[in-house]
Length: 130
Image 1: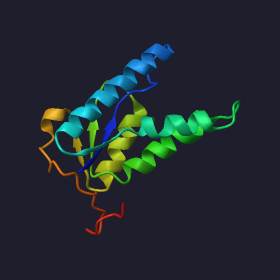
Image 2: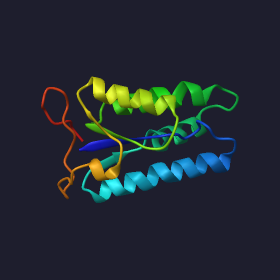
Image 3: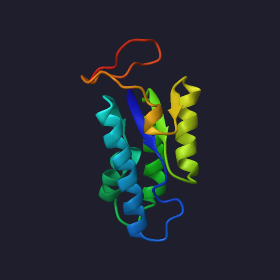
C-alpha cells in the first residue's frame, strides 16, 4: 500500500528547531511503514523543496503546502496519523477516508505488506502507472 504519514509540522511550533523535530518524527514513522513493506508518503517532504524554489516574498508556504499534501492524500491507499493537534493532518485523514481508504493511528495497526512494494490501486481497481 501507499501510506501517507500525517502529523504536525508547523502546528504548535515556536521555532525552526521544533519544525525539524516534527519532520524527523514524520520521517521516522515513514521508515517504520517502509520496513513493514509499504510505500510511505510524507507530504511535507514533497512540498518543502517546491516552497524553497518559489520566489521569495511570495505566500509560497500557504499556497503550496496543503494543496500539494492534499493532492498526495488523494492518491494514497491509507494514512497513518501521528502526533498532536494539526488541522492539516486531520484534513488529510478525511481525504483518504472519503475515498474509502484506511486511517491508522499507530504503526502497529498497519498490516505487514508485500516486501516487494506494489503500485497503489486507483478507485476503479486498475493499477496506476509508475
